[in-house]
Structure formats: structure tokens, C-alpha cells
Length: 81
View 1 (cartoon, rainbow, N blue to C red):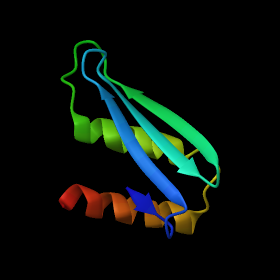
View 2 (view 1 turned 90 degrees about the vertical axis):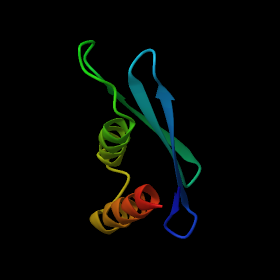
View 3 (view 1 turned 120 degrees about the vertical axis):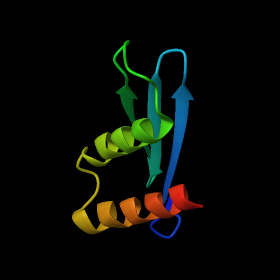
């Protein structure tokens, strides 16, 4: 998923066995990674993992409110395609 005029690239990697989702953002030459992990008794859900990991990666402070809003809007467009 590309945002902010191509300056930001978001992708997810899913580890079904470990019930983990990694969100990897490339922004201005930096790579930022966040993780969401299920409890061992929870059912793994890719959509929930994507949302949690994206929320965590956006909390790092690299992004201002307008950028975060744009990323979330693009994410919801991406999910509805």
C-alpha cells in the first residue's frame, strides 16, 4: 500500500503458526517495524493483526496527525478493494 504521494510504503507479513502480524513501513529511507501477536488461546485474524500493527507503527512519532489520518484513509480503501 502506498501513501503520501509514494513517500510511504506499507506492507504486512503474516506468521500464521506464531499468530503474529508484522507491519513494515518504509518512509524517507527509514524502515519502521511493529508487531501484533495473539494470545495462544485466541483465534488468529489477519484484519485485526493488520490494524493493531499499523496503529503501533504509527505511534512511533515519525508521523504528524495529517499523515496518520491519510494513512488510515488509504488503509480503509485498501481493505475495501
